[in-house]
Amino acid sequence: MNNAGIHDDAVFPGMQPGQWQRVVDVSLNGFYNVTQPLMMPMIRTRWGRIVNITSVAGIAGNRGQVNYAAAKGALHSATKALSLEVASRGITVNAVAPGIIETAMSRGSFDAKAIAQLVPVKRAGRPEEVAGLVGYLASDEAGYITGG
Image (tube, rainbow, N blue to C red; front, side, top):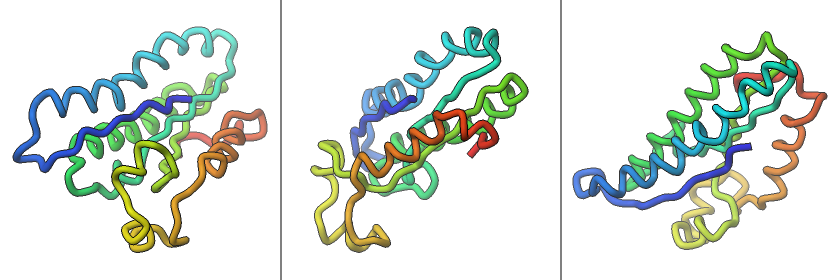
């Protein structure tokens, strides 16, 4: 599972190169650095499960987070492309794009009123709610599910 992500928010016209690079390095390049060395062992055993944690920001965007949305959107696209490359080898590749989850990262970014406006269930999700889905995608039972 790839779960790396940081944010360093700024409106794009005022974003500094370092802000862009830090977020892309962790949120996107981390996927490459963790996953690429594991591919040949998975291919040799003809089995593997890769689950990337992306973000709804990578699908819908978010003001002040062009760098984060770009990195997570690219991770979503990389998930789809890699799933096509390795499906015939028994390896599944999926992305989970949770909304606002109760974490240290989200606490400073969203108050209760914003969460109520943005989230259909009117609350932040809990990490264990996402973990159940990730656990399933990593299991033998999910061998048919890939590219999503």
